[in-house]
Image: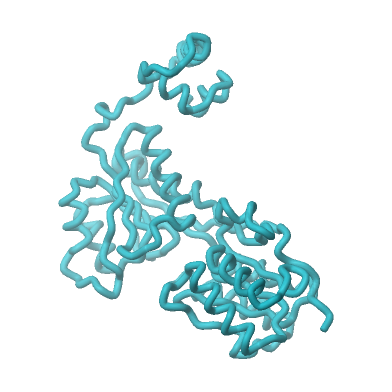
Length: 337
């Protein structure tokens, strides 16, 4: 039994149950009694923060990462919810970008300075940095990145398969002139997505023009990047009937560029994204995309670190999620020129 279960059984919100547990004002007597009856019947005993005082898990992202980007916010929410329910602290730390770091133990030093017992890393780290974390006995799990060494956990999605499935969907609609807006290909998940796209096109016997692959933008995977890349693409390759963007933000930018160029989405050109941000279902047109289980990935990573700290598990797992194709209204059959 946890706070969500109590909320569901009592018909109250999680926030209301939290106020009851903390004996706060702003709750009607009727609601308070509903919650207390469920709490008493279940024998639920919340762990206060003081009971786990000193347990602090870092959420590590690279400095310069788009903090309000939906990818980060969803993973962060998953971690924070788990931490709140289990009574420990999750704190956000910014780490130097990979190409600006040395190998002098900067990550371990940062975690120790902030008195963190464990870490969830939404950033790539080197093998040496991973081994430094193991030597320092700081349980650590990577999210959306991988490091294949024992002692460091990771949780990721199958980026190759996700891009393959999106491409196959466009091919089934009849598209052949499909462009890909790339992210920074030095990052593993971006290169895996591009490879999935290329292999799906190859399997269908479609030759991909080099110009259909638009290289990444200095702002990498932002709306601005998608907008600028799409403008370049549309100017040089008017034959394109569909665009696969490296993530939803880039897809938003691509849609804006298409509309600015007088193209209707999806009547004249189809656009798909990747990640399924919360706003994608409300975008106009609502975006077809590949859903990653970002909340679950964040919560699982936090749980593994917590369980390792409590010696409930001996090894940190490696897990790969398969994405889910979400079909909405940004795609249609290819236009007939």
